[in-house]
Length: 334
Image (cartoon, rainbow, N blue to C red; front, side, top):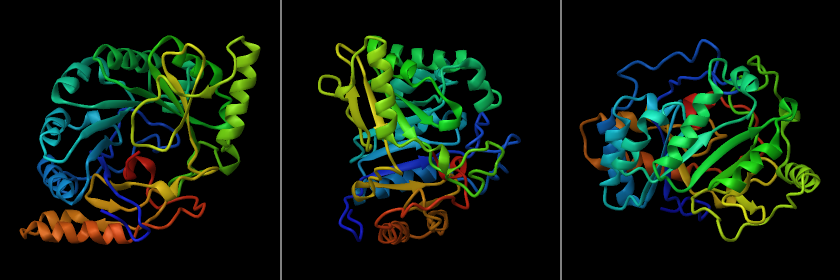
């Protein structure tokens, strides 16, 4: 599939649920979002059917997100089903890692290809403050479980916020002794509550990736680690826009994802599916296309294809520095 700007679209991000076992301050309110009803959310069978149709159109890679996708009952069975669809080359997962200690082995057995774990701080007290209810020890146990289950690559996603003053060098060090790929992501003000939801963050909290890399290099040199250099030996395979670097003799890499300072819209290859069955052409756009109605219309697959092509035609050329969306990250799918 190609959109109206000539970009090949072969990647579908699927939100399995808007629910989560954490309450991260930039993602959802403390009491949680107003949960979708059972009838509003796509069934696993509907998701599988949609992916079969999308695969026939050219989608080859799928990532499951949330909320927290592992709180959705049947997630493992869905992964197994998606892996069996002709044309689907890889199924990946983005998770907070809390449930991995008990689920990593079965996820690997089901055919999950790779895991991204969201972790924004290495300070246990700050972790609890950001997540409002989470345990840092549980998150670290999830990383251990992912490595023990044999997932490769295992990527850690850290949203960097200026006012949090996170220990970015300690994050980067995690790539040295273990095969971990640490990715620093510029904070994106997504959702109408961005900057007004109680987290106190705004556009001034964005640290451009080039500035962040310079900070890490300065701290790493002072610590005797040397500067980051472009990754070569351990550059992870993947579908995203990260630029990867590495320390000498490291087992993993340090990546930078720059949606604001170096936006990668010209290379965007994805569509998004919300848990309630809306196709979003762009994370920063409020345009949505109702594929749930097409799936439930009782008609042929052509109605579903029509919605997908409509969404494809509506993909913008870029996000044009838009700040805020009507729906928050947990509802869109991280």
